Amino acid sequence: MRSIAELDLQYAHRFYGFKGEAQYLHGHTGHLTIEVEDSVNAGVNMVFPCNEIQKTAWDLLRNFDHALILREDDPLLPAILDVYEKQGIRNGAPTNKMMGPAFKTDLATAYPECRLVVTKETMTVEGMIKIVYDLLKDKLNIAKITFTSGVNAATADYKVEGSMDRCPLCGITLVNGVCPKCGYTKR
Ligand SMILES: [Zn+2]
Ligand SMILES: [Zn+2]
Image (cartoon, rainbow, N blue to C red):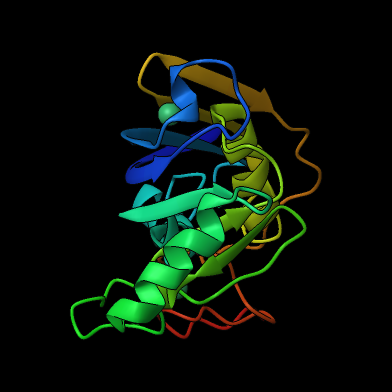
């Protein structure tokens, strides 16, 4: 069975080199749906708590929220960094609090201190799904990701292999047989 979690991300981007209006900088509220597949955990009668899926995803994905997402070869990138630098906000500002941990994968690098994500590929809805899967595939048994942004939408299915060992009391993944939330220990 599947547990399904949803979250919204507000961001600005553009399709550099794209022959259409999306080559201009603009913004969206993107809507992300993550489907996690596993057996039903008998203790809590759920596959996985949806708020915990949200929390796991949000920890990394909040770096995309109220962020600017640019492709690594976009000339806007050095231009914007230059403005941020001159303005004294390149390395952070007291009002920039909603930061996740900085991450770097083959597809994306997050600079939470200045709310910027630099991507290898154009950040289309398809591109975002690839990035999200790459960031979360080791943390969640992801069976499907759907991302919609304006009139654009894409979805991808993944084959789930194996089952996560989950706490029978609160449903989250055990770490070395111990629940990081309630302390339950598997015998
Ligand atoms: Zn767009
Ligand atoms: Zn627990």
